[in-house]
Image (cartoon, rainbow, N blue to C red; front, side, top):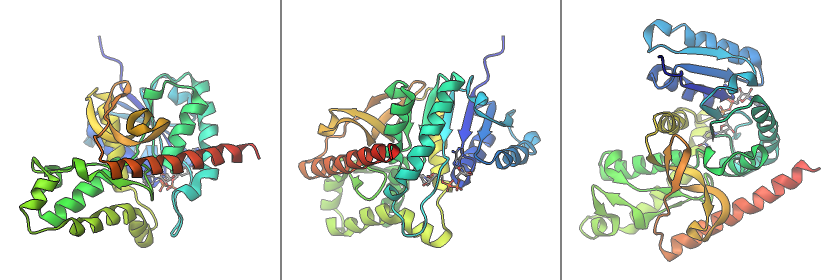
Length: 317
Ligand SMILES: NC(=O)c1ccc[n+]([C@@H]2O[C@H](COP(=O)([O-])OP(=O)(O)OC[C@H]3O[C@@H](n4cnc5c(N)ncnc54)[C@H](O)[C@@H]3O)[C@@H](O)[C@H]2O)c1
Protein backbone atom coordinates (compact mmCIF):
# COMPACT_ATOMS: atom_id res chain seq x y z
CA UNK A 1 0.00 0.00 0.00
CA UNK A 2 1.28 3.47 -0.90
CA UNK A 3 2.08 5.64 2.13
CA UNK A 4 0.08 8.86 2.46
CA UNK A 5 1.64 11.71 0.55
CA UNK A 6 3.37 14.30 2.70
CA UNK A 7 1.67 17.63 2.20
CA UNK A 8 2.68 21.19 3.03
CA UNK A 9 0.52 24.29 2.59
CA UNK A 10 2.11 27.72 2.28
CA UNK A 11 0.06 30.79 3.25
CA UNK A 12 1.63 33.91 1.76
CA UNK A 13 3.24 33.29 -1.63
CA UNK A 14 5.52 36.34 -1.51
CA UNK A 15 9.30 36.57 -1.54
CA UNK A 16 9.88 34.68 1.73
CA UNK A 17 7.19 32.10 1.08
CA UNK A 18 8.29 31.35 -2.46
CA UNK A 19 12.00 31.19 -1.55
CA UNK A 20 10.98 28.47 0.92
CA UNK A 21 8.64 26.82 -1.62
CA UNK A 22 11.30 26.73 -4.33
CA UNK A 23 13.69 24.86 -2.01
CA UNK A 24 10.95 22.51 -0.82
CA UNK A 25 9.78 21.85 -4.38
CA UNK A 26 13.13 20.54 -5.59
CA UNK A 27 14.01 18.64 -2.37
CA UNK A 28 11.87 15.49 -2.60
CA UNK A 29 10.86 15.97 1.06
CA UNK A 30 7.13 16.16 0.30
CA UNK A 31 4.82 15.11 -2.51
CA UNK A 32 2.14 17.82 -2.32
CA UNK A 33 2.44 21.58 -1.91
CA UNK A 34 -0.59 23.88 -1.69
CA UNK A 35 -0.29 27.65 -2.11
CA UNK A 36 -2.64 30.29 -0.65
CA UNK A 37 -2.29 34.04 -1.09
CA UNK A 38 -4.40 37.13 -0.53
CA UNK A 39 -4.15 37.51 -4.31
CA UNK A 40 -5.31 34.11 -5.67
CA UNK A 41 -3.83 34.77 -9.10
CA UNK A 42 -0.41 35.25 -7.57
CA UNK A 43 -0.63 31.81 -5.92
CA UNK A 44 -1.96 30.32 -9.16
CA UNK A 45 0.89 31.77 -11.21
CA UNK A 46 3.48 30.55 -8.70
CA UNK A 47 1.98 27.03 -8.78
CA UNK A 48 2.08 27.00 -12.59
CA UNK A 49 5.68 28.20 -12.67
CA UNK A 50 6.83 25.50 -10.21
CA UNK A 51 4.83 22.69 -11.86
CA UNK A 52 6.49 23.46 -15.19
CA UNK A 53 9.73 22.03 -13.74
CA UNK A 54 7.90 18.78 -12.96
CA UNK A 55 10.09 16.65 -15.22
CA UNK A 56 13.22 17.90 -13.49
CA UNK A 57 12.50 17.18 -9.79
CA UNK A 58 11.28 14.26 -7.62
CA UNK A 59 7.49 13.77 -8.07
CA UNK A 60 5.51 16.59 -6.47
CA UNK A 61 2.19 18.27 -7.25
CA UNK A 62 1.66 21.97 -6.59
CA UNK A 63 -1.85 23.36 -6.24
CA UNK A 64 -3.29 26.77 -5.43
CA UNK A 65 -6.60 27.78 -3.91
CA UNK A 66 -8.19 28.38 -0.53
CA UNK A 67 -7.97 27.00 3.00
CA UNK A 68 -9.66 23.73 1.99
CA UNK A 69 -6.12 22.70 1.00
CA UNK A 70 -5.16 22.68 4.69
CA UNK A 71 -7.57 19.89 5.73
CA UNK A 72 -5.20 16.98 5.02
CA UNK A 73 -1.88 18.85 5.25
CA UNK A 74 0.91 17.78 7.61
CA UNK A 75 2.49 21.22 7.92
CA UNK A 76 1.31 24.77 7.26
CA UNK A 77 3.90 27.51 6.74
CA UNK A 78 2.75 31.09 7.28
CA UNK A 79 4.78 33.76 5.48
CA UNK A 80 1.92 36.12 4.64
CA UNK A 81 1.51 39.69 5.80
CA UNK A 82 3.38 42.92 5.49
CA UNK A 83 7.19 42.99 5.42
CA UNK A 84 9.47 45.67 6.97
CA UNK A 85 10.09 48.82 4.95
CA UNK A 86 13.51 50.50 5.13
CA UNK A 87 13.80 52.14 8.57
CA UNK A 88 10.98 50.10 10.16
CA UNK A 89 11.59 47.68 13.04
CA UNK A 90 9.88 44.31 13.10
CA UNK A 91 7.81 45.39 16.10
CA UNK A 92 6.43 48.31 14.01
CA UNK A 93 4.50 45.76 11.93
CA UNK A 94 2.59 44.27 14.81
CA UNK A 95 -0.82 45.96 14.68
CA UNK A 96 -1.28 45.15 11.00
CA UNK A 97 0.05 41.62 11.02
CA UNK A 98 -1.77 40.47 14.16
CA UNK A 99 -5.05 41.09 12.32
CA UNK A 100 -3.77 39.06 9.37
CA UNK A 101 -2.81 36.18 11.71
CA UNK A 102 -6.21 36.29 13.44
CA UNK A 103 -7.99 35.95 10.11
CA UNK A 104 -5.68 33.12 8.99
CA UNK A 105 -6.15 31.30 12.33
CA UNK A 106 -9.94 31.28 11.97
CA UNK A 107 -9.73 29.82 8.48
CA UNK A 108 -7.12 27.21 9.46
CA UNK A 109 -9.26 25.99 12.38
CA UNK A 110 -12.35 25.86 10.13
CA UNK A 111 -10.46 23.69 7.60
CA UNK A 112 -10.05 20.86 10.14
CA UNK A 113 -6.24 21.01 9.93
CA UNK A 114 -4.50 18.80 12.48
CA UNK A 115 -0.76 19.20 11.99
CA UNK A 116 2.10 21.55 12.82
CA UNK A 117 2.15 25.25 11.89
CA UNK A 118 5.42 27.07 11.27
CA UNK A 119 5.26 30.87 11.10
CA UNK A 120 7.82 33.39 9.80
CA UNK A 121 5.71 36.56 9.47
CA UNK A 122 7.01 39.42 11.61
CA UNK A 123 7.22 40.28 14.41
CA UNK A 124 7.56 36.53 14.51
CA UNK A 125 7.71 35.90 18.27
CA UNK A 126 4.68 38.07 18.96
CA UNK A 127 2.74 36.47 16.10
CA UNK A 128 3.70 32.95 17.23
CA UNK A 129 2.13 33.69 20.64
CA UNK A 130 -0.96 35.15 18.97
CA UNK A 131 -1.29 32.22 16.53
CA UNK A 132 -1.41 29.72 19.42
CA UNK A 133 -3.98 31.82 21.27
CA UNK A 134 -6.20 32.29 18.19
CA UNK A 135 -6.07 28.64 17.02
CA UNK A 136 -6.07 27.02 20.47
CA UNK A 137 -3.75 24.32 19.04
CA UNK A 138 -1.32 22.43 21.31
CA UNK A 139 1.68 24.64 22.12
CA UNK A 140 4.24 22.20 20.72
CA UNK A 141 2.46 22.24 17.35
CA UNK A 142 3.01 25.96 16.82
CA UNK A 143 6.59 26.78 15.87
CA UNK A 144 7.97 30.26 15.14
CA UNK A 145 11.03 30.56 12.91
CA UNK A 146 12.46 32.48 15.88
CA UNK A 147 16.23 32.99 15.77
CA UNK A 148 16.98 30.18 13.29
CA UNK A 149 18.05 32.74 10.69
CA UNK A 150 19.92 34.96 13.18
CA UNK A 151 21.78 31.89 14.47
CA UNK A 152 22.85 30.99 10.94
CA UNK A 153 23.98 34.59 10.40
CA UNK A 154 25.93 34.42 13.67
CA UNK A 155 27.71 31.17 12.77
CA UNK A 156 28.45 32.47 9.28
CA UNK A 157 29.83 35.84 10.50
CA UNK A 158 31.86 34.31 13.34
CA UNK A 159 33.24 31.67 10.98
CA UNK A 160 34.05 34.36 8.44
CA UNK A 161 35.99 36.38 11.02
CA UNK A 162 37.94 33.31 12.16
CA UNK A 163 38.30 31.79 8.69
CA UNK A 164 36.52 28.63 9.87
CA UNK A 165 33.54 26.95 8.18
CA UNK A 166 30.22 28.06 9.77
CA UNK A 167 29.39 24.43 10.57
CA UNK A 168 32.51 24.22 12.79
CA UNK A 169 31.25 27.15 14.90
CA UNK A 170 28.51 26.17 17.33
CA UNK A 171 26.44 28.79 19.09
CA UNK A 172 23.07 30.49 19.27
CA UNK A 173 21.34 33.80 19.01
CA UNK A 174 18.42 33.68 21.46
CA UNK A 175 15.55 35.95 22.50
CA UNK A 176 13.51 38.12 20.17
CA UNK A 177 14.02 37.81 16.41
CA UNK A 178 14.64 41.56 16.52
CA UNK A 179 16.48 44.33 18.29
CA UNK A 180 16.62 42.79 21.82
CA UNK A 181 18.16 39.48 20.70
CA UNK A 182 21.48 38.33 22.21
CA UNK A 183 24.37 36.02 21.41
CA UNK A 184 24.75 33.29 24.03
CA UNK A 185 28.55 33.65 24.13
CA UNK A 186 28.92 31.42 27.19
CA UNK A 187 27.65 28.53 25.02
CA UNK A 188 29.73 29.14 21.89
CA UNK A 189 32.16 26.44 20.75
CA UNK A 190 34.78 26.87 18.03
CA UNK A 191 35.70 23.47 16.60
CA UNK A 192 34.92 21.78 19.89
CA UNK A 193 36.68 24.34 22.15
CA UNK A 194 34.71 26.54 24.53
CA UNK A 195 34.85 30.10 23.20
CA UNK A 196 36.63 31.44 26.34
CA UNK A 197 39.34 28.78 26.03
CA UNK A 198 39.63 29.45 22.31
CA UNK A 199 40.06 33.21 22.97
CA UNK A 200 42.75 32.61 25.61
CA UNK A 201 44.97 30.88 23.06
CA UNK A 202 44.17 33.07 20.04
CA UNK A 203 45.22 36.51 18.79
CA UNK A 204 41.66 37.84 19.28
CA UNK A 205 40.04 39.65 22.22
CA UNK A 206 36.40 39.63 23.37
CA UNK A 207 36.00 43.17 21.93
CA UNK A 208 36.74 41.85 18.44
CA UNK A 209 33.56 39.83 18.71
CA UNK A 210 31.17 42.44 20.09
CA UNK A 211 30.94 43.80 16.55
CA UNK A 212 29.92 40.37 15.23
CA UNK A 213 26.93 40.32 17.57
CA UNK A 214 25.98 43.86 16.52
CA UNK A 215 26.30 42.96 12.82
CA UNK A 216 24.03 39.94 13.28
CA UNK A 217 21.37 42.07 14.96
CA UNK A 218 21.59 44.68 12.19
CA UNK A 219 21.87 42.20 9.30
CA UNK A 220 18.26 42.45 8.11
CA UNK A 221 18.41 46.28 8.08
CA UNK A 222 21.59 46.15 5.97
CA UNK A 223 20.01 43.80 3.42
CA UNK A 224 16.68 45.68 3.34
CA UNK A 225 18.51 48.99 2.74
CA UNK A 226 20.17 47.45 -0.31
CA UNK A 227 17.50 45.18 -1.85
CA UNK A 228 14.31 46.08 0.05
CA UNK A 229 13.74 42.62 1.55
CA UNK A 230 15.44 39.47 2.88
CA UNK A 231 14.21 36.12 1.63
CA UNK A 232 16.74 33.49 0.49
CA UNK A 233 18.24 32.81 3.93
CA UNK A 234 14.88 32.78 5.75
CA UNK A 235 13.52 30.56 2.95
CA UNK A 236 16.26 28.03 3.70
CA UNK A 237 15.70 28.39 7.45
CA UNK A 238 12.01 27.58 6.97
CA UNK A 239 12.89 24.62 4.76
CA UNK A 240 15.25 23.28 7.47
CA UNK A 241 12.48 23.50 10.10
CA UNK A 242 9.83 21.90 7.85
CA UNK A 243 12.20 19.09 6.79
CA UNK A 244 12.94 18.36 10.47
CA UNK A 245 9.18 18.04 11.09
CA UNK A 246 8.29 15.94 8.03
CA UNK A 247 11.23 13.57 8.50
CA UNK A 248 10.86 13.46 12.31
CA UNK A 249 14.53 14.37 12.59
CA UNK A 250 14.62 15.61 16.20
CA UNK A 251 17.09 18.28 15.11
CA UNK A 252 18.14 21.11 17.42
CA UNK A 253 17.14 24.49 15.96
CA UNK A 254 16.71 27.97 17.45
CA UNK A 255 12.97 28.39 16.96
CA UNK A 256 10.42 30.49 18.78
CA UNK A 257 9.34 27.88 21.34
CA UNK A 258 7.04 28.08 24.35
CA UNK A 259 8.93 28.70 27.61
CA UNK A 260 7.39 27.53 30.86
CA UNK A 261 9.97 28.61 33.41
CA UNK A 262 13.07 28.19 31.23
CA UNK A 263 15.40 31.20 31.61
CA UNK A 264 12.95 32.39 34.30
CA UNK A 265 10.42 33.13 31.51
CA UNK A 266 6.84 32.02 32.08
CA UNK A 267 4.24 31.45 29.34
CA UNK A 268 5.89 32.97 26.25
CA UNK A 269 7.16 31.92 22.82
CA UNK A 270 10.69 33.28 22.36
CA UNK A 271 13.84 32.29 20.45
CA UNK A 272 15.63 29.35 22.10
CA UNK A 273 17.15 26.09 20.90
CA UNK A 274 14.57 23.30 20.78
CA UNK A 275 14.30 19.76 19.45
CA UNK A 276 12.15 19.70 16.31
CA UNK A 277 10.42 16.57 15.04
CA UNK A 278 7.10 15.21 13.82
CA UNK A 279 5.09 16.79 16.65
CA UNK A 280 6.73 20.20 16.26
CA UNK A 281 8.69 21.14 19.38
CA UNK A 282 9.61 17.93 21.24
CA UNK A 283 11.39 19.88 23.98
CA UNK A 284 12.92 23.25 24.73
CA UNK A 285 16.69 23.13 25.22
CA UNK A 286 17.44 25.63 27.98
CA UNK A 287 20.97 26.92 27.48
CA UNK A 288 22.94 27.43 30.71
CA UNK A 289 23.23 31.22 30.26
CA UNK A 290 25.43 33.33 32.57
CA UNK A 291 23.94 36.06 34.76
CA UNK A 292 24.35 38.88 32.24
CA UNK A 293 22.90 36.81 29.39
CA UNK A 294 19.97 35.71 31.55
CA UNK A 295 19.18 39.35 32.33
CA UNK A 296 19.25 40.23 28.61
CA UNK A 297 17.03 37.24 27.78
CA UNK A 298 14.52 38.31 30.44
CA UNK A 299 14.57 41.88 29.09
CA UNK A 300 13.83 40.54 25.60
CA UNK A 301 10.90 38.54 27.02
CA UNK A 302 9.59 41.65 28.80
CA UNK A 303 9.64 43.68 25.56
CA UNK A 304 7.81 40.88 23.73
CA UNK A 305 5.17 40.54 26.47
CA UNK A 306 4.52 44.29 26.45
CA UNK A 307 4.26 44.37 22.65
CA UNK A 308 1.91 41.39 22.70
CA UNK A 309 -0.40 43.02 25.25
CA UNK A 310 -0.53 46.23 23.17
CA UNK A 311 -1.23 44.20 20.02
CA UNK A 312 -4.14 42.35 21.67
CA UNK A 313 -5.51 45.70 22.86
CA UNK A 314 -5.24 47.10 19.30
CA UNK A 315 -7.58 44.33 18.10
CA UNK A 316 -10.34 45.63 20.33
CA UNK A 317 -10.22 49.16 18.93
N1 LIG B 1 11.16 35.40 10.51
C1 LIG B 1 12.12 35.84 9.73
O1 LIG B 1 13.31 35.55 9.98
C2 LIG B 1 11.75 36.70 8.54
C3 LIG B 1 12.72 37.09 7.60
C4 LIG B 1 12.30 37.87 6.52
C5 LIG B 1 10.97 38.27 6.41
N2 LIG B 1 10.08 37.87 7.36
C6 LIG B 1 8.66 38.26 7.29
O2 LIG B 1 7.96 37.44 6.37
C7 LIG B 1 6.78 38.13 5.92
C8 LIG B 1 6.70 38.09 4.40
O3 LIG B 1 7.73 38.86 3.83
P1 LIG B 1 7.92 38.94 2.24
O4 LIG B 1 9.19 39.67 2.01
O5 LIG B 1 7.69 37.61 1.64
O6 LIG B 1 6.71 39.89 1.85
P2 LIG B 1 5.92 39.94 0.45
O7 LIG B 1 5.16 41.21 0.44
O8 LIG B 1 6.85 39.61 -0.68
O9 LIG B 1 4.92 38.71 0.57
C9 LIG B 1 3.86 38.67 1.46
C10 LIG B 1 2.74 37.90 0.80
O10 LIG B 1 1.71 37.71 1.77
C11 LIG B 1 0.48 37.87 1.08
N3 LIG B 1 -0.56 38.17 2.07
C12 LIG B 1 -0.78 39.33 2.74
N4 LIG B 1 -1.85 39.20 3.54
C13 LIG B 1 -2.30 37.93 3.39
C14 LIG B 1 -3.39 37.21 3.93
N5 LIG B 1 -4.23 37.74 4.80
N6 LIG B 1 -3.56 35.93 3.50
C15 LIG B 1 -2.74 35.36 2.61
N7 LIG B 1 -1.70 36.01 2.07
C16 LIG B 1 -1.47 37.27 2.45
C17 LIG B 1 0.73 39.01 0.09
O11 LIG B 1 -0.24 39.03 -0.95
C18 LIG B 1 2.13 38.64 -0.40
O12 LIG B 1 2.11 37.80 -1.54
C19 LIG B 1 6.90 39.55 6.49
O13 LIG B 1 6.13 39.68 7.66
C20 LIG B 1 8.37 39.67 6.82
O14 LIG B 1 8.65 40.65 7.79
C21 LIG B 1 10.43 37.09 8.40
